[in-house]
Length: 421
Ligand SMILES: *Cc1c(COP(=O)(O)O)cnc(C)c1O
Image (tube, rainbow, N blue to C red):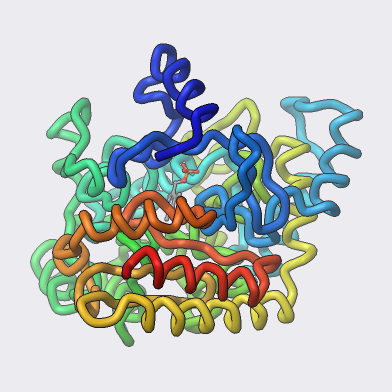
């Protein structure tokens, strides 16, 4: 399906990189064909290796909320690069970045910068365990929290797509510390806390799931997580690596008016550079070394170019942007719903959207699993042929950026209608 230049590159890549890709979700295994190799990306467009342009709804899997190569972000990064790429010593830039994040997300009082969402979630769990001196934690089926051993249990998207429920190489002894429940099942969470509340260090949740496709929390679910944690001395962790700065400047927690104890951020916060954050309540974060006994470190943490891209991105996240994303999202939602007709459902929160090929609603991984993935693959191929780059998996949310236009959305809806005809 892909162009001949990408085909050639993919053959070369497959000889030196497992599956030809540096992250499994980039492979097109779930939809057939080879991945499009990207030469450049500007605004809402990516350019394939053969020069063909696509309207992009992957957005680098989340970071590109301002569109690609946003001029002020690129200029800011170029300016700091001349003064050195990494020092392994503190900088004013990383302090300014921490201050900007804390100003945007008031539940965060103290934070650490790290280099990936995986590091952020792994560290947040370690902090919660160190703080509570307990070992078990709870996650929800279909939520993805990065690829640390104990988090690769019923972890949605990439894993779900490939039908691998748990990764090989994860010791059972490690996975046993992870308790999993169905997303949105407040009653099961309450029962679990009643049975084992004194052993539970933390509950980690995607406040709006993106990693089984877009699945919103039911009213009361997130608030129950926080209050049950408080009642039982556990730590509520909102993994906002995807939703942070996307669903509002203050993330899902601002949108729903909630205050988790710890939060992880990534993707948008680095503006396309490798940067992520974990942070939260001061008394909890004070267990982190060198203040406390929980060790966590990183040679490139708080990298000057990365925090500069983050700062420049955060500077542009204003109310007008979120209004625009909401309007574009609503138009895409309506258009896709009409194009898909019966037997499918569109779920959206702000600029995160999924067309599920099941009547729905999709409230949990059990619901998502019922999707007709063959029909999704046909839809995906049809869009690609028509110049629309949609996430190559039924179980991934698509993202809208602030530089998509109503015309882009109209073209996408037309392509979807043709692809599904
Ligand atoms: C992407 C993602 C992660 C992992 O982040 P990486 O930077 O890919 O390691 C963790 N949690 C959520 C919710 C994510 O969407």
